[in-house]
Image 1 (cartoon, rainbow, N blue to C red):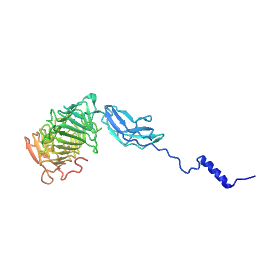
Image 2 (cartoon, helix red, strand yellow):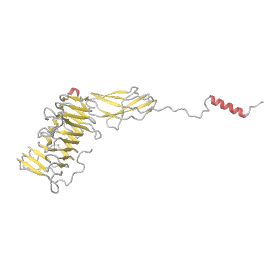
Image 3 (cartoon, helix red, strand yellow):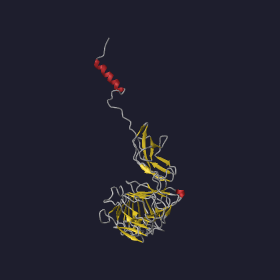
Image 4 (spheres, rainbow, N blue to C red):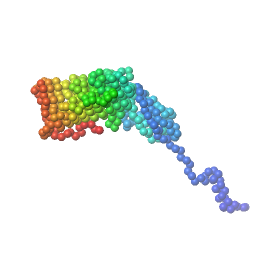
Length: 408
Protein backbone atom coordinates (compact mmCIF):
# COMPACT_ATOMS: atom_id res chain seq x y z
CA UNK A 1 0.00 0.00 0.00
CA UNK A 2 1.39 3.35 -1.02
CA UNK A 3 1.50 6.30 1.40
CA UNK A 4 1.74 10.07 0.80
CA UNK A 5 4.70 11.93 2.10
CA UNK A 6 3.96 13.78 5.39
CA UNK A 7 4.69 17.13 3.77
CA UNK A 8 1.97 16.61 1.15
CA UNK A 9 -0.56 15.66 3.88
CA UNK A 10 0.22 18.80 5.86
CA UNK A 11 -0.24 21.00 2.79
CA UNK A 12 -3.60 19.38 2.06
CA UNK A 13 -4.87 20.06 5.59
CA UNK A 14 -3.74 23.69 5.43
CA UNK A 15 -5.47 24.20 2.10
CA UNK A 16 -8.71 22.80 3.54
CA UNK A 17 -8.51 25.08 6.59
CA UNK A 18 -7.88 28.16 4.46
CA UNK A 19 -10.81 27.31 2.20
CA UNK A 20 -13.10 27.14 5.26
CA UNK A 21 -11.69 30.31 6.78
CA UNK A 22 -10.22 28.47 9.72
CA UNK A 23 -6.72 29.54 8.92
CA UNK A 24 -7.33 33.26 9.46
CA UNK A 25 -5.37 34.72 12.37
CA UNK A 26 -7.52 37.93 12.64
CA UNK A 27 -10.48 38.19 15.11
CA UNK A 28 -13.99 38.81 13.78
CA UNK A 29 -15.16 42.47 13.91
CA UNK A 30 -16.98 43.41 17.13
CA UNK A 31 -20.33 45.12 16.49
CA UNK A 32 -20.30 48.74 17.68
CA UNK A 33 -22.43 49.50 20.75
CA UNK A 34 -25.06 52.20 21.09
CA UNK A 35 -23.99 55.83 21.43
CA UNK A 36 -25.40 58.40 23.84
CA UNK A 37 -27.60 60.73 21.75
CA UNK A 38 -26.54 64.35 21.34
CA UNK A 39 -28.42 67.62 21.03
CA UNK A 40 -31.08 66.95 23.67
CA UNK A 41 -33.35 70.02 23.86
CA UNK A 42 -36.58 70.87 25.70
CA UNK A 43 -39.32 73.41 25.07
CA UNK A 44 -42.15 73.99 27.52
CA UNK A 45 -45.73 75.11 26.92
CA UNK A 46 -48.93 74.94 28.95
CA UNK A 47 -49.36 71.29 29.95
CA UNK A 48 -46.48 70.00 27.82
CA UNK A 49 -42.70 69.69 27.59
CA UNK A 50 -41.47 68.77 24.13
CA UNK A 51 -38.15 66.90 23.93
CA UNK A 52 -35.99 66.36 20.84
CA UNK A 53 -32.51 65.00 20.16
CA UNK A 54 -30.22 64.02 17.29
CA UNK A 55 -30.17 60.56 15.77
CA UNK A 56 -27.08 58.36 15.70
CA UNK A 57 -26.36 55.64 13.15
CA UNK A 58 -25.37 53.14 15.84
CA UNK A 59 -28.67 53.50 17.74
CA UNK A 60 -31.76 51.47 16.87
CA UNK A 61 -33.95 53.06 19.54
CA UNK A 62 -34.01 55.28 22.60
CA UNK A 63 -35.09 55.46 26.24
CA UNK A 64 -36.10 58.80 27.77
CA UNK A 65 -35.76 59.47 31.49
CA UNK A 66 -37.16 62.22 33.72
CA UNK A 67 -36.29 63.37 37.24
CA UNK A 68 -37.81 65.98 39.52
CA UNK A 69 -34.77 66.09 41.81
CA UNK A 70 -31.86 65.25 39.49
CA UNK A 71 -31.21 62.04 41.41
CA UNK A 72 -34.12 59.62 41.01
CA UNK A 73 -34.92 58.83 37.38
CA UNK A 74 -38.10 57.42 35.84
CA UNK A 75 -38.23 55.97 32.31
CA UNK A 76 -41.07 57.66 30.43
CA UNK A 77 -41.48 55.26 27.51
CA UNK A 78 -43.05 51.82 27.94
CA UNK A 79 -41.91 50.70 24.47
CA UNK A 80 -38.61 51.53 22.80
CA UNK A 81 -38.70 54.94 21.15
CA UNK A 82 -37.76 54.99 17.49
CA UNK A 83 -38.45 58.68 16.87
CA UNK A 84 -36.15 61.46 18.09
CA UNK A 85 -38.92 63.53 19.68
CA UNK A 86 -41.26 63.07 22.63
CA UNK A 87 -44.16 65.08 24.07
CA UNK A 88 -44.26 64.81 27.86
CA UNK A 89 -47.73 65.75 29.14
CA UNK A 90 -47.56 67.50 32.53
CA UNK A 91 -50.53 67.49 34.90
CA UNK A 92 -51.62 70.72 36.58
CA UNK A 93 -51.47 71.74 39.38
CA UNK A 94 -49.23 68.84 40.48
CA UNK A 95 -46.56 69.71 37.91
CA UNK A 96 -46.80 73.50 38.22
CA UNK A 97 -43.41 75.02 38.94
CA UNK A 98 -41.66 71.64 38.95
CA UNK A 99 -38.37 71.87 37.09
CA UNK A 100 -37.94 68.50 35.41
CA UNK A 101 -34.55 67.21 34.30
CA UNK A 102 -34.37 64.92 31.26
CA UNK A 103 -31.79 62.60 29.72
CA UNK A 104 -31.91 60.09 26.88
CA UNK A 105 -30.00 56.89 26.11
CA UNK A 106 -29.35 55.05 22.85
CA UNK A 107 -30.20 51.38 22.31
CA UNK A 108 -28.72 48.69 20.07
CA UNK A 109 -30.43 45.38 20.68
CA UNK A 110 -30.33 44.76 24.43
CA UNK A 111 -27.42 47.15 24.95
CA UNK A 112 -28.05 50.66 26.33
CA UNK A 113 -25.65 53.58 26.07
CA UNK A 114 -24.59 55.91 28.82
CA UNK A 115 -26.98 58.85 29.37
CA UNK A 116 -26.84 62.00 27.29
CA UNK A 117 -26.25 65.42 28.75
CA UNK A 118 -29.28 66.71 30.65
CA UNK A 119 -31.75 69.54 30.08
CA UNK A 120 -34.08 71.28 32.55
CA UNK A 121 -37.55 72.57 31.76
CA UNK A 122 -41.00 73.23 33.23
CA UNK A 123 -44.41 73.51 31.69
CA UNK A 124 -46.40 76.72 31.48
CA UNK A 125 -47.37 79.60 29.22
CA UNK A 126 -44.26 81.59 28.32
CA UNK A 127 -44.44 85.32 28.99
CA UNK A 128 -44.07 87.26 25.73
CA UNK A 129 -40.55 88.55 25.19
CA UNK A 130 -41.81 92.07 24.53
CA UNK A 131 -44.81 93.74 26.17
CA UNK A 132 -45.60 97.22 24.89
CA UNK A 133 -48.22 98.23 27.46
CA UNK A 134 -47.67 96.11 30.54
CA UNK A 135 -48.85 92.55 31.07
CA UNK A 136 -51.41 90.95 33.38
CA UNK A 137 -51.65 87.19 33.82
CA UNK A 138 -55.01 85.42 33.38
CA UNK A 139 -56.20 82.24 35.04
CA UNK A 140 -56.94 80.37 31.80
CA UNK A 141 -53.27 80.47 30.79
CA UNK A 142 -51.75 79.93 34.23
CA UNK A 143 -49.15 78.90 35.22
CA UNK A 144 -46.80 81.27 33.40
CA UNK A 145 -43.04 80.99 32.98
CA UNK A 146 -40.54 83.82 32.56
CA UNK A 147 -37.76 82.47 30.33
CA UNK A 148 -34.98 84.30 28.51
CA UNK A 149 -35.46 88.09 28.59
CA UNK A 150 -38.92 89.53 29.22
CA UNK A 151 -39.25 93.29 28.62
CA UNK A 152 -42.24 95.24 29.94
CA UNK A 153 -42.87 98.80 28.75
CA UNK A 154 -45.53 101.36 29.55
CA UNK A 155 -47.21 99.64 32.48
CA UNK A 156 -46.91 97.05 35.21
CA UNK A 157 -46.22 93.34 35.20
CA UNK A 158 -49.14 92.00 37.25
CA UNK A 159 -49.28 88.44 38.59
CA UNK A 160 -53.01 88.46 39.21
CA UNK A 161 -55.02 86.72 41.90
CA UNK A 162 -55.46 83.02 41.15
CA UNK A 163 -52.50 82.87 38.76
CA UNK A 164 -48.86 81.86 39.09
CA UNK A 165 -45.58 83.01 37.55
CA UNK A 166 -42.43 80.90 37.75
CA UNK A 167 -39.05 82.42 36.87
CA UNK A 168 -36.58 80.05 35.21
CA UNK A 169 -32.78 79.74 35.17
CA UNK A 170 -31.00 82.82 33.76
CA UNK A 171 -34.33 84.60 33.13
CA UNK A 172 -34.33 88.42 33.06
CA UNK A 173 -37.42 90.52 33.81
CA UNK A 174 -36.83 94.12 32.69
CA UNK A 175 -39.49 96.76 33.42
CA UNK A 176 -39.68 100.30 32.15
CA UNK A 177 -39.07 102.65 35.07
CA UNK A 178 -42.17 104.36 36.39
CA UNK A 179 -43.87 105.85 39.41
CA UNK A 180 -44.58 102.46 40.98
CA UNK A 181 -48.34 102.87 40.54
CA UNK A 182 -49.47 102.99 36.90
CA UNK A 183 -46.09 101.83 35.62
CA UNK A 184 -42.82 100.37 36.80
CA UNK A 185 -44.19 97.81 39.22
CA UNK A 186 -43.88 94.04 39.50
CA UNK A 187 -47.21 93.61 41.27
CA UNK A 188 -47.74 90.18 42.80
CA UNK A 189 -51.31 89.38 43.81
CA UNK A 190 -51.10 85.66 43.12
CA UNK A 191 -48.06 83.36 43.25
CA UNK A 192 -44.50 84.29 42.26
CA UNK A 193 -41.76 81.70 42.60
CA UNK A 194 -38.21 81.93 41.30
CA UNK A 195 -37.02 78.42 40.41
CA UNK A 196 -33.61 79.61 39.19
CA UNK A 197 -30.58 78.20 40.97
CA UNK A 198 -27.55 80.01 42.39
CA UNK A 199 -25.56 78.61 39.45
CA UNK A 200 -28.05 80.17 37.01
CA UNK A 201 -29.61 83.09 38.91
CA UNK A 202 -32.49 85.21 37.65
CA UNK A 203 -32.34 89.00 37.14
CA UNK A 204 -34.94 91.69 37.83
CA UNK A 205 -34.15 95.20 36.65
CA UNK A 206 -35.51 98.40 35.07
CA UNK A 207 -34.71 100.58 32.06
CA UNK A 208 -35.65 103.96 30.63
CA UNK A 209 -36.90 104.02 27.06
CA UNK A 210 -34.71 106.29 24.94
CA UNK A 211 -32.47 107.34 27.79
CA UNK A 212 -30.51 106.52 30.92
CA UNK A 213 -32.03 106.11 34.35
CA UNK A 214 -31.54 109.16 36.55
CA UNK A 215 -30.72 108.77 40.21
CA UNK A 216 -33.74 107.44 42.17
CA UNK A 217 -35.56 106.19 39.03
CA UNK A 218 -36.37 102.52 38.72
CA UNK A 219 -39.06 100.00 39.53
CA UNK A 220 -40.80 98.55 42.57
CA UNK A 221 -41.79 95.05 43.67
CA UNK A 222 -45.11 94.70 45.50
CA UNK A 223 -46.48 91.62 47.25
CA UNK A 224 -50.12 92.61 47.73
CA UNK A 225 -52.43 89.93 49.20
CA UNK A 226 -50.22 87.40 47.44
CA UNK A 227 -49.92 83.71 48.35
CA UNK A 228 -47.93 83.59 51.59
CA UNK A 229 -44.88 81.37 51.91
CA UNK A 230 -45.44 78.22 53.97
CA UNK A 231 -42.19 76.83 55.43
CA UNK A 232 -43.89 73.55 56.31
CA UNK A 233 -44.10 72.49 52.66
CA UNK A 234 -42.03 75.18 50.90
CA UNK A 235 -45.08 76.52 49.08
CA UNK A 236 -46.17 80.10 48.39
CA UNK A 237 -44.30 83.15 47.12
CA UNK A 238 -40.53 82.68 46.99
CA UNK A 239 -38.21 85.32 45.57
CA UNK A 240 -34.74 83.76 45.65
CA UNK A 241 -31.47 83.25 43.79
CA UNK A 242 -31.75 86.53 41.94
CA UNK A 243 -29.93 89.79 41.28
CA UNK A 244 -32.25 92.79 41.57
CA UNK A 245 -31.02 96.16 40.33
CA UNK A 246 -32.46 99.62 39.67
CA UNK A 247 -35.06 99.57 42.42
CA UNK A 248 -36.56 103.04 42.77
CA UNK A 249 -36.31 105.27 45.81
CA UNK A 250 -39.30 106.82 47.55
CA UNK A 251 -41.20 106.96 50.80
CA UNK A 252 -44.25 105.17 49.39
CA UNK A 253 -43.55 103.14 46.26
CA UNK A 254 -39.80 102.58 46.10
CA UNK A 255 -38.07 99.25 46.62
CA UNK A 256 -40.11 96.38 48.05
CA UNK A 257 -43.59 96.59 49.58
CA UNK A 258 -45.26 93.74 51.46
CA UNK A 259 -48.88 94.02 52.59
CA UNK A 260 -51.45 91.48 53.76
CA UNK A 261 -49.22 88.51 52.95
CA UNK A 262 -45.90 86.92 53.80
CA UNK A 263 -43.49 86.03 50.98
CA UNK A 264 -40.01 84.65 51.50
CA UNK A 265 -37.07 86.72 50.23
CA UNK A 266 -34.00 84.48 50.19
CA UNK A 267 -30.46 84.60 48.77
CA UNK A 268 -30.94 87.91 46.94
CA UNK A 269 -28.55 90.63 45.80
CA UNK A 270 -30.78 93.72 45.73
CA UNK A 271 -29.54 97.22 44.85
CA UNK A 272 -31.57 100.42 44.62
CA UNK A 273 -30.79 103.17 42.13
CA UNK A 274 -30.65 105.65 45.00
CA UNK A 275 -27.35 107.19 46.06
CA UNK A 276 -29.14 108.66 49.10
CA UNK A 277 -30.11 105.18 50.26
CA UNK A 278 -33.77 106.24 50.46
CA UNK A 279 -35.21 103.01 49.10
CA UNK A 280 -36.94 100.64 51.46
CA UNK A 281 -38.33 97.23 52.22
CA UNK A 282 -41.75 98.42 53.42
CA UNK A 283 -43.75 96.20 55.75
CA UNK A 284 -47.32 97.53 55.60
CA UNK A 285 -50.53 96.30 57.24
CA UNK A 286 -50.84 92.54 57.49
CA UNK A 287 -47.24 91.92 56.41
CA UNK A 288 -45.38 88.83 57.54
CA UNK A 289 -42.95 86.51 55.79
CA UNK A 290 -39.30 85.53 55.96
CA UNK A 291 -36.27 87.55 54.89
CA UNK A 292 -33.00 85.64 55.09
CA UNK A 293 -29.54 85.62 53.53
CA UNK A 294 -30.17 88.72 51.43
CA UNK A 295 -28.03 91.77 50.68
CA UNK A 296 -29.79 95.13 50.35
CA UNK A 297 -27.71 97.99 48.96
CA UNK A 298 -28.84 101.64 49.34
CA UNK A 299 -31.91 100.31 51.17
CA UNK A 300 -33.32 100.07 54.69
CA UNK A 301 -36.07 98.10 56.43
CA UNK A 302 -39.13 100.26 57.19
CA UNK A 303 -41.60 98.60 59.57
CA UNK A 304 -45.03 100.21 59.31
CA UNK A 305 -47.19 97.48 60.82
CA UNK A 306 -47.28 95.58 64.11
CA UNK A 307 -45.22 92.39 63.73
CA UNK A 308 -45.55 91.51 67.43
CA UNK A 309 -46.85 87.95 67.88
CA UNK A 310 -46.75 87.24 64.14
CA UNK A 311 -44.74 84.92 61.92
CA UNK A 312 -42.40 87.52 60.43
CA UNK A 313 -38.69 86.85 60.76
CA UNK A 314 -35.53 88.44 59.37
CA UNK A 315 -32.10 86.91 59.86
CA UNK A 316 -28.69 86.70 58.18
CA UNK A 317 -29.36 89.76 56.00
CA UNK A 318 -26.80 92.43 55.15
CA UNK A 319 -27.62 96.12 54.65
CA UNK A 320 -25.27 98.60 53.02
CA UNK A 321 -25.66 102.33 52.44
CA UNK A 322 -29.26 102.81 53.57
CA UNK A 323 -30.69 106.20 54.52
CA UNK A 324 -31.40 104.69 57.96
CA UNK A 325 -30.00 101.59 59.57
CA UNK A 326 -33.61 100.60 60.34
CA UNK A 327 -36.91 102.46 60.69
CA UNK A 328 -40.19 101.96 62.58
CA UNK A 329 -43.05 104.29 61.64
CA UNK A 330 -46.61 104.61 62.96
CA UNK A 331 -46.82 101.39 64.98
CA UNK A 332 -47.59 100.42 68.56
CA UNK A 333 -44.62 99.38 70.66
CA UNK A 334 -43.02 96.93 71.02
CA UNK A 335 -43.94 96.32 67.33
CA UNK A 336 -41.73 93.20 67.17
CA UNK A 337 -40.86 90.31 69.44
CA UNK A 338 -37.30 89.85 70.63
CA UNK A 339 -35.53 87.66 68.08
CA UNK A 340 -37.80 88.41 65.12
CA UNK A 341 -35.12 90.71 63.69
CA UNK A 342 -31.84 89.11 64.73
CA UNK A 343 -28.49 87.97 63.35
CA UNK A 344 -28.31 90.72 60.72
CA UNK A 345 -25.48 93.01 59.61
CA UNK A 346 -26.68 96.64 59.44
CA UNK A 347 -24.40 99.21 57.84
CA UNK A 348 -26.60 102.14 56.95
CA UNK A 349 -26.11 105.62 58.25
CA UNK A 350 -25.39 105.63 62.00
CA UNK A 351 -29.06 106.36 62.72
CA UNK A 352 -32.04 104.19 63.64
CA UNK A 353 -35.39 105.91 63.11
CA UNK A 354 -38.50 105.86 65.32
CA UNK A 355 -41.50 107.98 64.39
CA UNK A 356 -45.01 108.19 65.83
CA UNK A 357 -44.67 105.07 67.97
CA UNK A 358 -47.41 104.61 70.57
CA UNK A 359 -47.08 102.60 73.77
CA UNK A 360 -44.44 102.47 76.46
CA UNK A 361 -42.33 99.39 75.65
CA UNK A 362 -39.00 99.84 73.94
CA UNK A 363 -38.61 98.17 70.54
CA UNK A 364 -36.41 95.03 70.91
CA UNK A 365 -33.91 94.56 68.08
CA UNK A 366 -31.02 92.89 69.88
CA UNK A 367 -28.69 90.30 68.43
CA UNK A 368 -27.68 92.40 65.40
CA UNK A 369 -24.45 94.08 64.31
CA UNK A 370 -24.61 97.85 63.77
CA UNK A 371 -21.57 98.78 61.73
CA UNK A 372 -22.51 102.44 61.34
CA UNK A 373 -22.30 103.50 64.98
CA UNK A 374 -19.58 104.27 67.46
CA UNK A 375 -18.74 102.59 70.74
CA UNK A 376 -18.16 98.98 71.68
CA UNK A 377 -20.18 97.26 70.40
CA UNK A 378 -21.12 99.85 67.78
CA UNK A 379 -24.66 101.15 68.13
CA UNK A 380 -26.56 103.53 65.88
CA UNK A 381 -27.86 106.79 67.26
CA UNK A 382 -31.61 107.28 67.48
CA UNK A 383 -33.62 109.70 65.42
CA UNK A 384 -37.09 110.06 66.95
CA UNK A 385 -40.28 111.99 66.36
CA UNK A 386 -43.64 112.00 68.16
CA UNK A 387 -42.56 109.14 70.40
CA UNK A 388 -41.25 108.51 73.89
CA UNK A 389 -40.09 104.92 73.43
CA UNK A 390 -36.64 103.86 72.28
CA UNK A 391 -34.84 100.95 70.69
CA UNK A 392 -33.62 98.14 72.91
CA UNK A 393 -30.40 96.95 71.25
CA UNK A 394 -29.63 94.35 73.92
CA UNK A 395 -27.49 92.44 73.24
CA UNK A 396 -25.82 93.95 70.18
CA UNK A 397 -23.15 91.94 68.36
CA UNK A 398 -19.56 93.17 68.40
CA UNK A 399 -18.83 91.88 64.89
CA UNK A 400 -20.70 90.92 61.76
CA UNK A 401 -22.49 87.58 62.12
CA UNK A 402 -20.98 84.71 60.17
CA UNK A 403 -22.99 83.77 57.11
CA UNK A 404 -24.90 87.03 56.77
CA UNK A 405 -25.77 87.86 53.18
CA UNK A 406 -26.32 85.62 50.14
CA UNK A 407 -24.59 82.28 49.77
CA UNK A 408 -23.37 83.14 46.25
